[in-house]
Length: 540
Image (cartoon, rainbow, N blue to C red):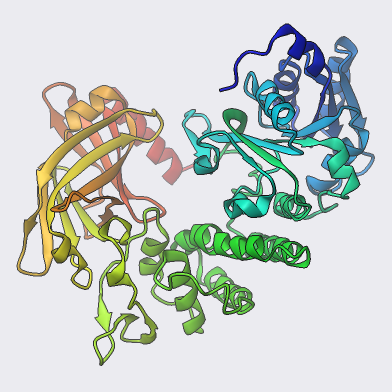
């Protein structure tokens, strides 16, 4: 964190920042966004609220706020632009302060965000200053940091090429920009209906080679509303058009970097696509219908065919690269459950473990050309180890089974497994228990433990995720998620008798990535509420 500024510093920074807030038909939320920007203090000269031709009274609400707040200016677009780029560009054109930042109408700036970014920009003479964004799940309030490794500690980069991982942070909203720098280099968002416009904007930004400062401070809260009637673009992924728009944005960003002579950043952008975008959508493939799967598979193959030898020069057994190789080797969708496991975080490479006739590890007998010869060379802490989880809720028993992976597991020598149940919505709330791993005759290692249902229900109802830390003879540790076995009856909701609560309703389930998780509701009232909710979903 930056120290509190002196009075002289405060006076020098007064009025240094314009905050551009954009929104469309967001009357219920836009006032909170505007107030969070105005609440940043005297460093904010103005808040430019750009209303994208709303029909729900948003513009009138903003005008009423502006009547009582001299620092708030309202700009109304006469026709809806269809995207976020045009209103942001409009706000950038109107900005009068030396620095500018962007805020969406359904998000907020946390207290001190502007001061932290501005202090770093002034101290380092940076044209771009970035800070930590957190994704806050609503209504639970669970927070997940976005690209935390980039913002773990303060850093100053003479140019983006000095730290290619910058291309992984494609957000425009967690950064402070020197206004003249953006204007001098013509750095703008794509206008009109252009989903994932941030990817193009940040590519143009890095292509201009600014001096960059990074701070560990929380500077943006991205609200994630999965139950909203109108989903955000990043959440509305059920239509194939969303994937096409995303690949188009990624392709455009790559071209911008390549044309600017930033080959290293361009290559890093394609590596980011494999490790982030491709894995995220591949995890969801089993949820889609056959028409979507075929369209997604064909389009992705076309996109990956554009990759050259340099783009494919990384570890061929890395999860994203391996996904791409399977896609390119098979004209038709195949092995979707196994691909989902590989796309999970952490990645799991589930059986079968095939070999070519000469003994080389490969993806499957049907795709022997997709070889895995580099996999056994990886340290165990980086292996995509597969652990199966079989939960018998009625007896409260959890059985874990660790699979051998081309001899790597046996050589490392499994010792034990720390079983952790981590509450999904309450950070830091977890229960841990360590159990030994014992070898079995079928090239697996097993561990059996009881699930502390009474304790989980006492601590908090709701969702609990299972994480397993495997420890090996040399001290190596590998954290994995456990693949949920789905044999008949294993994932069925159960009412379990409890001496403490009378009854606990336990619902094991598989996450989108295939990992085991469970929901817990304590007592007859809690179980009744859960059952009533399920009935409402079945019979609306």
